[in-house]
Amino acid sequence: MRSFNYFEIKNHKWDSEILGYIAAIYKEAGKQELYLKQRPAELEKLVEIAKIQSTEASNAIEGIVTTNTRIRQLVEERTTPRNRDEQEIAGYRDALSIIHESFDAIPITRNYILQLHKIMYSPSNNPMAGQTKNVQNYISAKYPDGHTEILFTPLAPYETPEALDRICEEYNRVIGNLELEPLIAIPVFIHDFLCIHPFNDGNGRMSRLLTTLLLYRNGFYVGKYISLEAKIAKHKDLYYDALGQSQEGWHEGTEDVTPFIKYLLSTILAAYRDFEDRFSIVEEKLPAIEMVRKATLQKIGKFTKQDIRELCPTLSVSSVEGSLRKLIDLGELKREGKGKGTYYYRLR
Image (cartoon, rainbow, N blue to C red; front, top):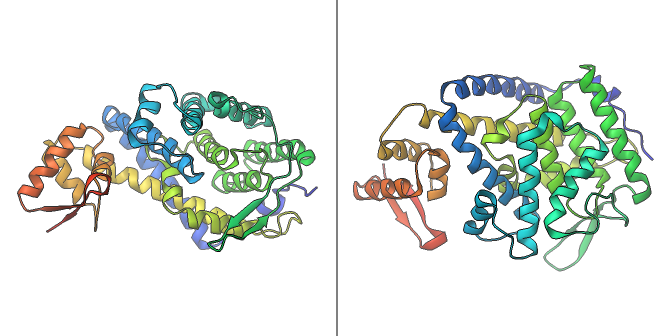
């Protein structure tokens, strides 16, 4: 089995792009801390929106879906799941909630990772919940002509428990001894986790839960207010491309994890910038129509009612809808489409 050694990574000379991402993320994290002290109550409303988006997006990446109304009911009201997809959505909700509430009491060990997996699969009564895989799994791509190609073969089942222990030990050592910048160690850990692919099911969703957990434990709380999962889902082709590039040579220990590090850091930075945009709208007390107008001015091209709701977390749905109608009447916006396909764009 390959060895997991952070020594070479620790001594790696990172390019200016990665160093730029790290510096920008620290700067944004400092600003976020100030913002939270200024308007804690308003920004707390971002938390529920982010939970809903994270739960919906992380499951949607894996093809697990339900309606927008049901997602809200499952996350906000904790209603009873009606089918297998909803059971899996409810499980992700539960695991994410535990991370939100108790991240500082969840050490990075194999046992805790297995417990999170068990929580994620509790509503669906999966017999392999909380257990590492018992069959060989493969990362493959299905092409339009119907043929499937194996892109990567993860570790065998018998190698998996020890490998999980090793990546946890290595990560805890370099973080505990301040040997490696956390914003480098986190993507490396997540990349190794995905290459091990320790479970029969749920590896992608577990990797996203672990990303949030590791960021929180290192003082980067952006995922609490802005959904990282939604950002990944929006550009999942970039996610799979970066992962594919970084997996080459992994079994031999010759992989270059740089593409995945850059991908994850750029996603984290984009989330922090989104947070700043949302703060700029809630920082001053404005009438609903002025708040919505300010939100629409941040949009280029088409946007939806939900896009505006995310930027105006302190407003009710009816306030957002009413304000959009007024802006249409004033000739500032145009509405097109019907139902779920409804979108808006600015006329000036």
